[in-house]
Length: 251
Length: 378
Image (cartoon, each protein chain N blue to C red):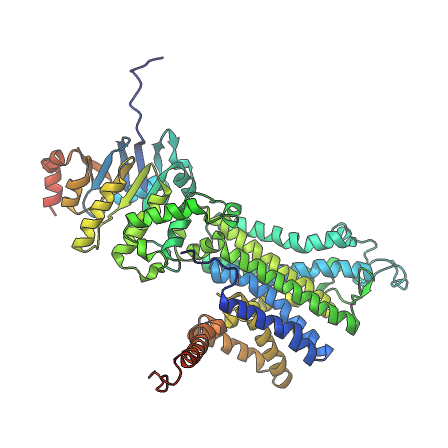
């Protein structure tokens, strides 16, 4: 055995990832690696391919070529629900919650048990489920709204609910697409607090425009531009990179 | 804290009881056997409606081909009855005695292989449930795994209804063709043509209907029911919560097919024949209209819709035969535009609150004695 010579085990290893839509390469030969318990923020101008990268990892979009390894498992060959079961959770940019269901039911559906047709027919709402739902509801500031239908929630509350739905899945890799977009200042502060609490013990991949927010949470920042990596490193490093300054100021 | 702790909530329980009283007491006592048999015929569509509530109302999967499954169930039953009616003694004037009459007319000399299992009553009962379920499974798997949905799915189901009709009409020697399978007499030796048999069959059907209502209600209240609602709104969110959306759609579609097939089998028994005119596009769309009028989100609404629209159809088409189809179309447009949740929506939004207010104000009046003189301004 070549102990000590093995490459470092990454949680997520994206290599040579390319996707082209009718010849347009939205993501072009992209490689990056996320470690266990790392918080990685992806920034970049509009159309840089940030959301597409998340779509590719969670299986919503199929890659043209390249590989995405998660804990040694090849994600590009799995279906969306299998990727979720492998431990990858995804929050969308616009809040997508089930508006005709209550907050409780929204969280319950995300509880990782009884995910087959038969399993969901025989699913019991037992104490474990109730406790976990109440626990998560407390974290996302919706403890007293459990019986409220989700369509009655404010925009910010819907965002929290969706984050809660991911939390209850307990993923190893959490992907958040602009979690504080469209929130009021006070909601933003609360969300930052919430995120800081939930990112413990897991890796997080975040797309965000709010630079103050990025500085607060990021371990490492990846700057995307035209589907490729422009710069990568600490926030300090990225901020002083002339290429990044040019792309951002050139607009 | 727990939201759906009871199987039926108060208004659902009332709905169940009201339907039970109507179907088990009022109608059998007040109608003659001819009219009661008509009600039985209407109710066979209620089975289809219950399936559509699950599949369309909850799951958001609009099928315009439920006649296919209604027909498959009906034909399975009709094949059994026809074989029983075609004993050698009954058919001795044919050139080949002992086979169904239409086969004889089409120069067939023996019963085809796929008819053979229908000599057995238990096999027939199983086939009524399994053949449509299997067929729905194949259609569902082919469509939903490829993410075909919405309007495209509706059009394809409609095409399947058309194809099956053409197939049945074309293969006259095997299916009885356009006339269908007629001259059915006995079920396991019991004559189904007598008034007494029709009376018994009516009650059998009502009991089966309540069984289906309870089964549908059970499905609705499990997590699967909530996943169907979730899927209708945010298919992607369900997928990214770790569920295989296609499998749940297939389940809903198969369940709807089985309900429709039970209705179809009862139709054959009540009416005494089965023909391709209950399989094709027009009957399939009518079934959707019954459900829409009753309320596609309500299991009881679907039953009422089937009863009332068919009742209107019979009475109106007796007096204005040409106008009926226009009336049906207008009704559908009116319901979709003005009352998207149908009769049950009108009940829940307008009538139920008024009754509640009336009851609660009466209660508070009796509690508060003379104080409650000035009615609240509203």
